[in-house]
Image (cartoon, rainbow, N blue to C red):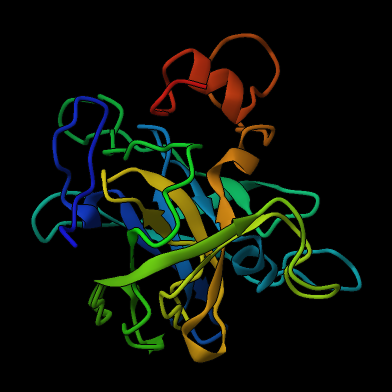
Length: 253
């Protein structure tokens, strides 16, 4: 399969500029890889798997136990570690939409913009080639995030099927895609692309015998996007921002 990540104009994007590792800050000052995320707005809103966020949530108190950071590869070898500040999670599916702290360029004062891929709610045909891009083979624990051994890669497979219902009663209790992509630890939350280079799914659950379950981009539509500057006084949904052209879907939703 040709590995392509496309923007709204159909132009290819370097995948590491819009797909990034998510790190949990450790008590000793180091950081541990917990998953992957990808941008959906140009100012730092992103998607990941809900269980990546729950890695730092106490199941009893519901309080966050450690800071989360995203490693944004700005250009070339330039790296920016951005704090993850707000999260909206899906009630059932293993999906989350997050916000990073906003940054401006030191010289110009202009907002720092990132590249964003095109999403789609259209399922690929069963048996077609699909691919994810993620960071699972990076070093698990780092002394400093800036010197971490990040090794992102594409991982290929096929779409085996899709379901509007659960797979089981405990783990995959939500609508999902099934693929043959091997989802390794740290790949959770990474985007899954169809043959046209559009994101149709999100890595969620790896499985035995090469079967993995992916969340659907269609299920992102009702989630809130915290702090997007529309000036309305309330947080818009993914669907609202898509209809305004701030989040890219093809075809339009």
